[in-house]
Each structure stands twice: as C-alpha cells, then as structure tokens.
Length: 328
Image (cartoon, rainbow, N blue to C red):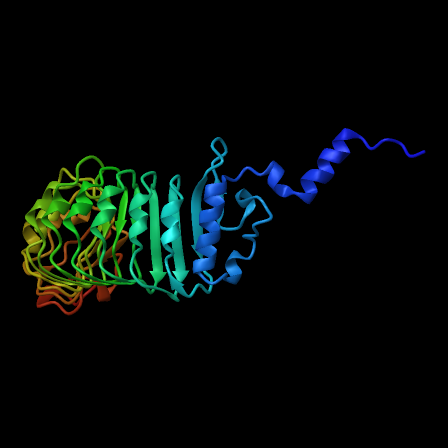
C-alpha cells in the first residue's frame, strides 16, 4: 500500500502545473502587457512574456512589492519595429516608462501615455519616433525625469512643459525642433530642471525670463540662437555647466559675472566680443572653450586658464598671451 501523498506536495504540484494560482500579477496588467507584445509583433526581446507565467517575473517589467501592480516598463537595445502601442496607457500604476536605443521604433509619442498619472520617469530616447513633442506631457504632474533626446521630433517646444513642478531634468536634445525657446522656461515653479536643448534648429533670442532661473546645467548648443545670453550667469547662481557653443550669440564677455560654482563653460563658435574677465581666474574650470569668437586682449594669468591648450582660445580677433602667442 502506497504512503499517502503529503498535502504540501499536492499544493506544490498544483502550483507547478498551474502557475496562475500563485500569481502576483494583476490580470488587467497582464492583459495590457500581452496586448503590447502583440502590437509589437511578438518581438524576441519580449519572449519571456508567456501568458502561462506570472508577469511579475517577465523581462523588462517590475511589480510593486506591496500592490503587485506593474510600476516599471523598460524596453531597450532590441529590434523592435513598429510604433509605441496604445496599450501602454492601460498600465495605470506605471512610474517608469522607457523605450531606449530602439532604432526601428517609429511613429508619434503615443497619446495614451497621458493616462499614466503616476509616471515619474518618461524616457523615449535614441529611437526613430517623429511628430511633435505633445502638449499632454504637461499633465503628467509627477514627472521628475523627461528624456526625449536622440529622436526625430519636429515642430516647436510646447510652453506647457514649464507646468511640470517636480522635474529634475528635461532632455529634448538631438531632434529637429524649431522655433524659439518658450518664455515659460524662465517660469518653472518648484524644481528648476537641468535643461538640455542642444542639436536642434531652435532660433531667435534666448528669453530674458531664463535669467530668473538658477539652472544647475543648461545646454543650448548647436542651434540658431542669437543675441544676448549674459543674463544666464550671475554671482548669486549655483550653475556648474553652461554650453552655448555653435550658435550666433553676440554679447560682451568682459561684462559677464560668472558664478563661483561654474566648472564647465563652452562658448565656441559665436560672435562674442570684449575680453576674458580677470575674475575668471578664480573659477575651477574643468572644461572651457571660447574659440571662434571675436575676443581681444590678454588672456588673464591664473586659476585654470593656462591649463587649457591653444585650441580653447584660437580663432579670435586679437586674443594674446599664454597659451597663445605673447602680446605685442
């Protein structure tokens, strides 16, 4: 006569045969994820998304340890042809959404993303998505990080993005954006985000309102910006990085007062005039470039100014002194 099978063994065997009995994953979340997979034509990168298994264990997703709702969807570095599926908007507890380094991902930024009210990090970067930067992003009031860089987005930057009060960083660099920098970007309430708008086709003057902001880092390089930018600086600021290179900016460098915190300053390929201020010798600069401008006068001696080679200073009207030729 056989020994009775223990109850724990029966439970173990039953769980093994039907994983759904011990499943953490919310059925609505699982359905949404399977719809995403289907819309993307069942790509290899999502092969672990098997309906017979708990979706909290699938690749590219995370479940909240308390609620068991899907709170993170991060798909990166895979072959993913097609558009962002509408079903991403059916994961209402998402806090992190990432589509990164997916060169075959095309189409617009999916409007259903507006449903994701808990979203803190939205990263759609290094893809081939196109269309405009949608206005609805300003409704995602919990966003702390927004990265839409290295895409093919076009049109103007929506001024409504300044409504995002918790934003630490805003990356719109390396797209095909046109028009001016919104005046509202000088009116961020709450957090002042690091601002990356480089490698676009932005034009016009930098709004004076940006002078009211104390940016940690601001990169407006490689655009078609013109006029004054001296108001971005100031002794009362805590800015550590400013890159305004390769624009058409025109102001007197000798009158600029730089914050003591500044460690990276790139102003090359503009129309800056005047001389390099003596007070720049008190800055601890790790990166510095004023080449291809219209500067004159003796390069001040001291601080880190002589630690850079001639390429930092060359192609100016009449700059002289080390590391350039001696002043006559």
